[in-house]
Length: 272
Image (cartoon, rainbow, N blue to C red):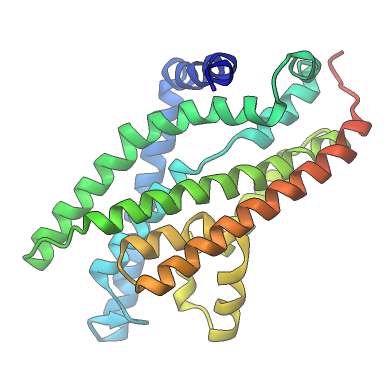
């Protein structure tokens, strides 16, 4: 264990330093995400007003605010750049240096991202959650915070990150074949945002479609942890949903290993 820590701790520190060095880029992502949440807030407020009731699809406006901002929190915490990193390293040839290092390639990328994830969690996720609980107390007149739901949310977010990282890793391996993932990356992000419930809660989907989407890995990236925090699942449902996340994390881990075996045979770098 001590050997593993010594091997990968430099990658973790590199991830932290990357956010510190490019802090304006980091702030831009956060501010952009918050602006998006406020835009969506007014959009959904209009929807609720047009519906003429206090609830819409079993969501109150307070629930919708919580969902929008928590989805943004989950998105920031599970955010992964591994596909872009792989593509860039293939283009400039530095992937060769990573491959000859005496470390596991997957874990080196994961360790680097964990540094950034830890920073985003401390500087963004927790302050937003605190702000949301203050908002709920002001609007509802009572303390809604549930520490058990928070702990289960954090556990679910960890599983969500493992799923998201492996999905992006699999996508990144496509760079071994096509070299440039920029356009495909935009398409991939749009599809994932829709299927994960980041744009529209899966609870608003038709029953048949919602059931299918809830069993897909994408719902594990955002929808599941958010619904757990909001208290929309009972105990048995929480256990079931966490189990689905864990199963997908294992399945996609296996898929990424299989894709890697084929991708490494296609390696040809543009920069070296």
